[in-house]
Length: 299
Image (cartoon, rainbow, N blue to C red; front, top):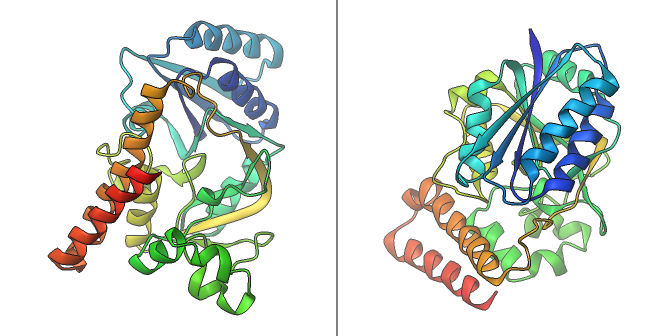
């Protein structure tokens, strides 16, 4: 039986994916069984060859019978959501960990995280503290759902200025749940896909990631649907990972940058239309779409 399936989507991050993989393996012990599933989205930087070599090297070096590997080689870039869904289809674990290829794991006791799920039946998903290389926590990893008010306070800068004062944090800092103590375990609305651990049965119940999201927004949407079922999502800061972020080998190509920007703002529209549009009238919905378009233009 596999306890935890760890899924990594790779796309033109050859060395970084190897660093991620190595950091994960160093944290795995023999108390539970693991499988590591890597889905490569048609990388053009020798990622496949490097990953195969490293898997072989890991098997020879660690010789741990409780860790198995699977590698899926896509012929095209299917997007982040679809690739992760591919991974889950072949996963045998009771729990699934989605982790970005540009994440480096510090020492994590994965058996402790599994035990936390086992003791808390209403916890559907969790994340650890996801830090950037600089400036502390990655804001995207500790989020509130983007209601109209929260989005307004964030994009107008009210969150940044008024949430400095404790009295205003809960009212104006909801986009990133700034009123919570980042050193304590607590419930959040959504983590990021950088480190997203979930019960497999719940993932299947909500029918996985919505593949309308090519990249960005799929993690937020998944979290929303988990909480609609009445499950909690927990922030568990005892363990830390580092999110390198924006490390794709293609990050400096203007065409790719434009495509990434397009997907980012398109994800906002998809999420809003799916979860909030039906609660508002046509004028408000048109205004929201217009503001997203404007934000994309001036960004």
